[in-house]
Image (cartoon, rainbow, N blue to C red; front, side, top):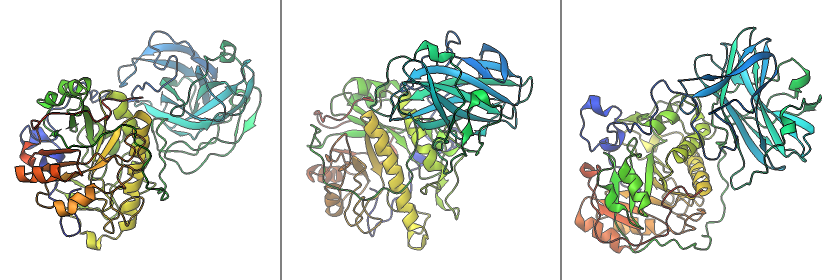
Length: 565
């Protein structure tokens, strides 16, 4: 919430956008200080990160190769060490004996009628493609059928995530993932690791897979292709059973490398009710202190109390002080800006650059420079960025169990960037739809893990518009908004923060808006505290974005203190 109808947003903070701090010689108050080594893998490490949601019993072959076997077209499966994977130290390796090589991965118990996500990281010869298929077995170990996702290009030098989201058929209780490498060559090497199987959120896995299914040879069966993998819009043609045909399954190529549990709904959400569900005990008033810590976590531990709130920056989110806040009952939000293409920091690199989450993103058509720190990303519905976004959010959650939510910078229904003329901007409708889609993904991930979302961007009635009711202020998908240095403007921002549309679709705060304001002056702080519309307020000029001390005492709010599920 940086501006309204007649106000332009302040030039975007140097402290929040520095691309190369050490080369620019900026101070420690910048958002991008020395990288947090605990959170950032070495430059050569690649592949998919681990997740507590993964149900595979042996995803990275940590002690042996149990569950891995050659189905066809290969020989000599062995467990080999790898040094270039971000999470795995071992992989299963086979030598191809045909143009199609299929490797079975560990069985997992599943539940019929649900859509499960399956994936693996793969290396294979240049020119080859890989596809995930899943063989389905009954409770007695009898083969039922199989389905599969789309194929995508792989490489011998980098790990490629291959994934599929597949409905579990009636009667199936066991799933066996098969990695199909198509276009291999005799004596070529194939490696797989980071096997990943995930149930739908809040679903319960069934009992362990029957051992008889591990070696069962599926009968000849043909099924329709499974839904396309994350980020694709087409489906492959019908494919024939791997066990009885050496012909390659359909190879509709996908450029996505998204983590399997990161399917993103990119269509613009339909307007729904804005009435808030019943409260679940979250308290948003009276206002209390919060702090932005772009330059490191030092001083954040002062907020380690129930009700304390801090926001960590692009690369300091693993600092011990933030973990101390969480352990003390406070809430830690982690910064992410999906709107401009500043790729500094691990999660911005995952989002903007080619990564385990997918290919590099593009700029918005027209090549709009937003400010001195970056250009406008193409975050339109259906864009690469939209297809990668959930993967990045899930990675943040998996790597930061102490986090309580997301601070989504620049996310509003219209632009206030100083270098973009909104009056002449030709894609206002697409901009709004893209911002809603990003908000929807943030809300979905937050709800799944019991987290909150605060957005720093305007959702103003009839000026970009609120959501879902464009004629009403506020974003129902966000738990609250951020007001940045608008002292003396409480006449506008008071009613703005008090809009009932905020948080109306949150399954965490249930309509209790958690709005947050920072001011330049003590008088500004007082007016926002007294407005009764802001849960968190502090006097924190831009120059102090490296941290600010709390004022007053803290009181519990019922907000999350860490990843809840």
